[in-house]
Image 1 (cartoon, rainbow, N blue to C red):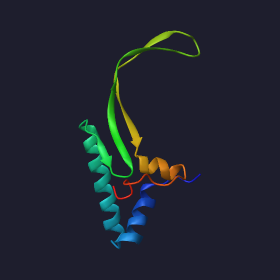
Image 2: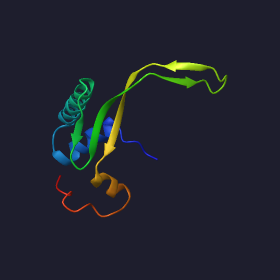
Image 3: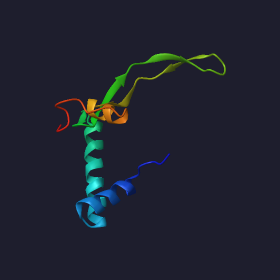
Image 4: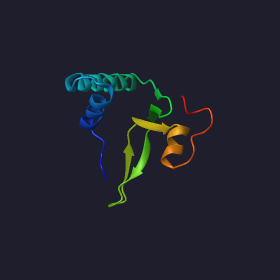
Length: 104
């Protein structure tokens, strides 16, 4: 299984868009920084035909150490979640893209 990295993405921008390697890398970093800053601010990031990244607040709860069985409090925290679009779900499952969703 291969992993897509920043370097792979920058190289794809370089080869498909025609920017220099430095410009491609800078463009990618700008986009990723903008996404991260938006999520840090607690806002959702929606990318059409791909999905939505959102920050959710999880409340405090009681967990259990599986080794000892002792209950421990799990503090409230923010978690990042991703909800794929119908288009992406269809592509992953090898199904036709839902009608009217192709251009979004």
